[in-house]
Image (cartoon, rainbow, N blue to C red):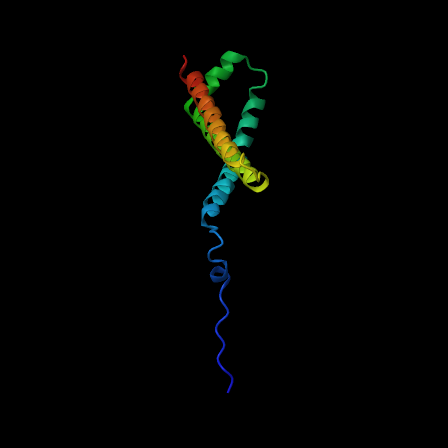
Length: 130
């Protein structure tokens, strides 16, 4: 009678000790969610800017002063810079193999955050300036 074989270990069991893929799932999902959010927001912004094509600064400020356009521009900025930060993080993690990786990741995160904050503050400044 042949001896019973041990069951073949699963892929997860064989990969044990070689790192975890759990951390990247959240970033991958966030990148997809922001990409999906950016499609209608970008289409809306382009259509709105085309409609405002011949308008002067006062008409643009009046348009941005309304609650819905201001909110949608802020959402667009948040989604765009989150998406940009996640995409640049992936590029840096995949292609930078030196001691510069961590400083580049930190700099990228801080720049995306700072530019987003400036954009949101500028939008709020225009929206509430009457």
